[in-house]
Image 1 (cartoon, rainbow, N blue to C red):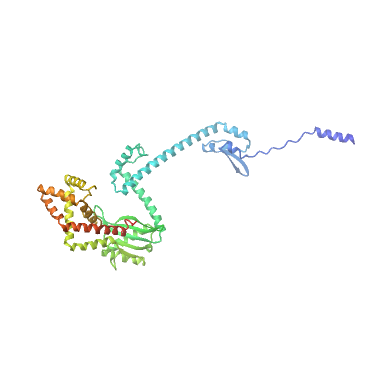
Image 2 (tube, one colour):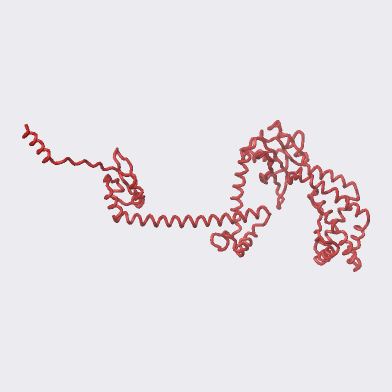
Length: 419
């Protein structure tokens, strides 16, 4: 029995130990060491790929998919000729892409700066031919993105293109506001351009975040001034902006029969499409019509003619204007107020003309006396018109009344708001 146990133990000692079978699999930490490595499961088995070799169009085991899940295979691939060339090409492409993106960013900033210049010109009614001079000035003062001429558009046609681009952005923003407003108001008026073509200017009034905003929608061509033609153009413009007529609850216009006619006016035609719309006669026009009643007062008509005569007397004479400016500086600490002429915009221009007449009156009398002594018959005639008490009293009366009327017109016209 003892001998059998001894033999069994000897046999166990002689038998070789069994080797543990290794399981080769992809290790996630390999990606940290080899950023180009990617592992996909295809047909139930793991395969490793090289992104650099794939992008460069190489053909090797790591583009077809390697199943050799060993770190040695990764080291061998990273040192092979295909991979070295692919990595070099990738670094060059990355550098080129970074350079292109940087150059593109600079060009975009330059273009954005030019658009800001054009936008400023548009807001301040600066003619397109002034664009080149403005960009040269910005370059002279070394403004950012204007130091070099590279990437700067100079031709006047470029200004038109940039204005159209700005217009599209502004109108897109306006469309978004219009969509968010349940109801809108429309303000229209007939105008003409420099070639005397009939135009229709359209404004929209809406509520945006509990604030009333007025925006210019456009100035459109109309072939005639009839109510039906104007209404058709209004409908066309609103429908192009996806605005239903039922959302238009107010129409502001002047008081002519084409606009205000009870049966066939533009307002009457609009009410057929939008039953709840109301029509408002422009307050500024109504006040102007009220002021026209002063035509029956001879003194007011004579006053306007006198103011126009004074303006014409100094308009084209620099020497007279300089003498008037010097006298104003001697008589008061304030600078001379430039002389104004009453013009077509009656509810604004008369106020400015009266204001300049009142502030410059002492210097005007003295300067006109000097011209009159020298034998100037026109100066003698004007002097005889502005010296009487009636002219002085009317000047001060209008200077008290017209500022109130002007402020009222501006407020009710939506051009300014009371503080």
